[in-house]
Length: 155
Image (cartoon, rainbow, N blue to C red):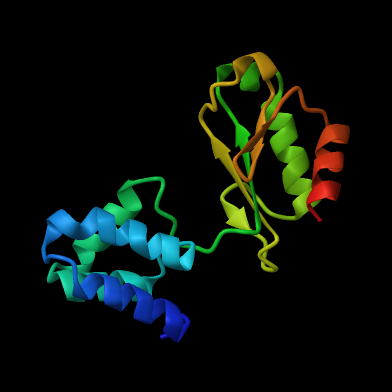
């Protein structure tokens, strides 16, 4: 296993006192993601083994729900809102600018794990369009210059 022994042991300890079966799957996946920051394949296999369910079932749930991550996220998780108001206010141009500045495409994480870039359908801040969420914090009325300032502050 590639994951740290401490993380694997923490997940194993949790699973050892968890009931078996699919009814415990969502909670086990949430626990794994809280331990690792995402849900690596090793954790999915361990969960399947300990809950006595097929690995395919575990993977199916992980891949169905968007809040479960199967790859590590960057220290700075950036999401561009692509909802209607943001789209009309040129969020696609901001996304392209971020992709150029960070050297990654939406849905990717930089190899140095400094940044992840993604999109979100709507953050509910339409009056501030275009909106970017960075580590859960909403930034609105953005321009390329504002993006540069935000990125500089995150470094």
